[in-house]
Image 1: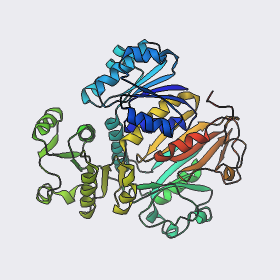
Image 2: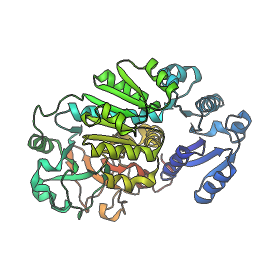
Image 3: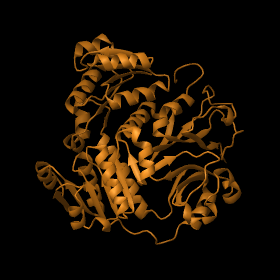
Length: 453
């Protein structure tokens, strides 16, 4: 596909990297010539220096010949204008990133008025992943997610003590024809290899035939064990804090927000019902003690600073809070997060880029996708005979470490693959992939004759 990206910030660069993995033709537009020079030197892309809001620039690049334009600059109004102008000039489909709550509250009206196909809100996207993780954990009794004859089960390793200290390669002898496709360990999702040893407090993601997985579910889940989510503390009253507090409050949880900016506290109080907004410093131990910090069911660190979010998350774990979630934008902190034992670290850039990629691929390729703890994605697609991964043993595909082929639907047959399994035309293939490895995943889907059909 021919795709234009307006804005070479973190999201623009991330989605560029992902798209190039799938052999798309990408044109990157930005006013910063230094960034464009670096991007053109690193990737096989076209770069255009200028303001994408200028109609003359959009005409100059023949925007009417593009399949998509993604407007991902740092300003909502600019993104909306760029997307609307591009659509009016003949671009087939347009996507705009917006962050302002007012835009999110009336996004359908905005899309209709401006003829924009999709609006993506990073903070709202990450909010839904956190909400889903917290609420489903406390309300879903079996941890099951099904697709056709295949099911995914998530459970704690200590529910089956015989698995502890065992390498992944020995699991088929212990559990039967199932595959451990991911492990959540100390807040980090790991795509395991055969030598990896299962540890206490690992959260295991197991894929297998639906009936076998249902039987396993009965062994690892106790009826009535889960209770409602009661008390949640959010550090940071930005857009993420606002969205999350609203959703959790509507769910029925008692929510508190700590925010340092007094004016922002007043704004939050006017927008949120049944949420206690506290003006103060979330790193102040006295304030946390006053608010019964160690009595919380969950703590979400969502300030504007990664370092502060990490510090607060570490404090929460030391206070024994069961579920601790941190918003982290820098991928370089991944190793640090793992050593700290945070339950969940979420990157809004990765999540937004993944959502945009799935929209672009649409029904031509992906038939199902599900984010896992905001760090990995379970994707189901239909195999084409011209794909590079077709008609070769899986062991010979050179699959990256962050990607695993979990299962295959072939007609009425459900296959848990091994290294000798070959993917055939028409197979529905389920893949587990770290969001950080989506670019490599896209390479697996390339067709031998060049671009996607």
